[in-house]
Picture (cartoon, rainbow, N blue to C red):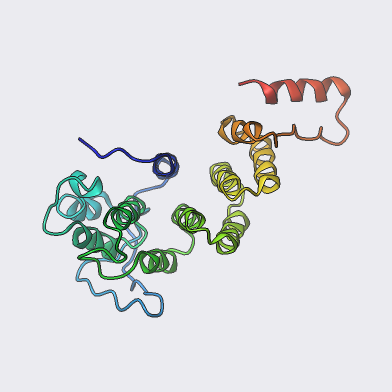
Length: 241
């Protein structure tokens, strides 16, 4: 049976499923995967590829052997130590979101960073993934979550500010950023993100619900020039579940 994931992992898995659903499966040209200073070189004979746009055949070649369900859930090895198979997966796909989550869980499980069989520390895997795919905001938000859980709050805010700046008109990214601001206890920024995604038409209520649970929810101000009936109707629609 798959291992039981904690609530943070469940949330990140939800982000991943929603984000990947809208991404095309197109092959990317080969380019080196830069490693952060002090993390060593990445030497692999296959790849690297951007996981978001890799062809399904490129994914299956690696995942069917090295990133099996047993490896992902840390319940059954494949070619060797869990870390070695996840390491290979991340060498081919530096921004593989499920693989970085599995490596993070393995570090926590073994209480060792890097775990046995890994080629670098978890921080290095995150750094390499962001360097390889700097526009992958989902992967970057996983790093924000990693920093938050380690109480590196200023670093987390800095990376999260970048995500918000780059998110454009993507309501899902802004919603996830709001959830992360809530984790940072930056409730004003979380509220601003909640209002932003409501204006974009998103109907998900999790962020609003979390803010309500700590007494920090406020309805958005009526749009300038809106009549009283229009403002009342707008407020009513926003408070509906």
